[in-house]
Length: 148
Image (cartoon, rainbow, N blue to C red; front, side, top):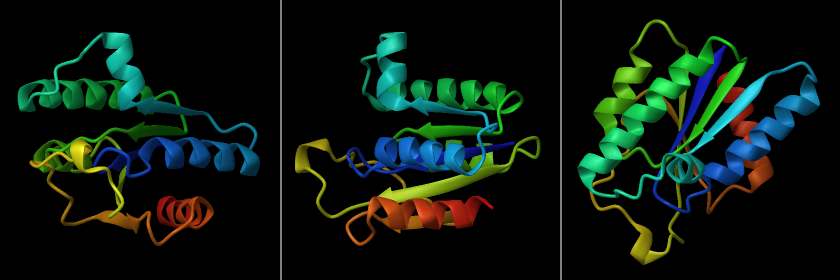
C-alpha cells in the first residue's frame, strides 16, 4: 500500500498521468485497488473555491487526511493536486506509517495566468518529470519504475 503524490503547477499533467497510471496498474493486475484524489474534483465536492495561500493550505491538509485514511484500504492512493507547500508534502513523506512516493511534474508550456508564484518544488526524495520532454507513455513508465 502506497500513496503516489503528484505535485506541480496547474496544467503540468498531474490528472492526466494519475489516470493513466491507474489504467496501467489495472492492466498489470486486475485485482489492484487504486483511488485517485484529484484536486479539481475534490474542490468541487467540498465546494472550496478559496485559492488564497491559507485556502490552499487547508485544501492540501484535507487531501493529506483523505490520502492517509484511504491508504489502509487500497493498494494505491494516487493524489493529483498542486500542493504548493513543501513542508506539508515533506511531513507526509516523513510519516513512518505510510509509503509515500512524490512525483514532481513540470513544463515550460504552462499557461502564464495559471502559475502559482509561491509554489515550492520538492528538493529531495522524489521523481522529477519534465512533461515537455516525455510522452504520457514514457512518463508512466518512469513512474512505474519509481514506485516498484
